[in-house]
Amino acid sequence: MVRTFLSIPRENIKSAERTLSVWEFFVRIQRAASLQELSANLGYPRSGTAALIASLVKLGYLIHDRAARKHLSTARIVELGSWMRRSTVGEDRDRIVPKLHALPRKIERFGTLEKGSYPEVPLRLEYRQTRFGERFSATMERVQRLQRELDGAP
Image (cartoon, rainbow, N blue to C red; front, top):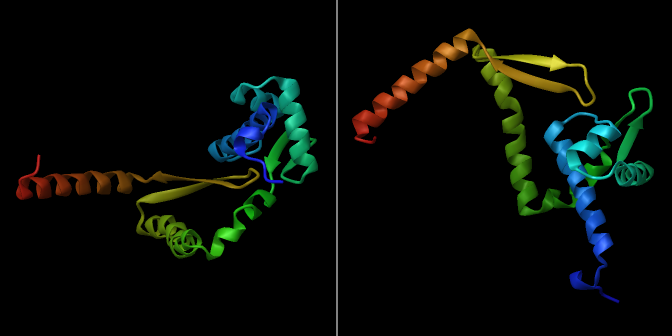
C-alpha cells in the first residue's frame, strides 16, 4: 500500500523535521555537541531531544562520546546520498570537489593564506589571511576598481 504525504500522521512529520534539523545543526557547527546544546539550539524539549538522539545513536547515525558527553554524526549519514555519485549532480561533484579541496593549499603556497588546525573530531581547519594576503587583496581591489572605471561601470 502506498501512503501519500497527507496520510502520514503529524507526529511522524514532526519527528522527520526534528531529525533533519539535527543534521542541519551538525552541518552548521561542524563539531560534536552535547545533548543540552542540541536541545537549546534546536528549541526542542530536552526529553524529546534525548529520545531522538538515542534513536539516532542506536541506528548508527550518531556516536556518543561518553567521556566528553557529546554526540557526533557518523559516516553512515554520508551513505544516504551515495547513490547520487553516478547522477549528473554526482558527476559534477566528483569533478569539482577535488579542485575546490586543492584551492586553499595552492593559495597557502602563494602566501596569502595560513592554515590553522584544531584537534577536534572531526578535525577543524581554518584559513586566515596573512599580512601579505591582506595587502595583496587590497591591491587586487584597487585593480578591479580601476578596471570598472575604465569600462565605465559605477
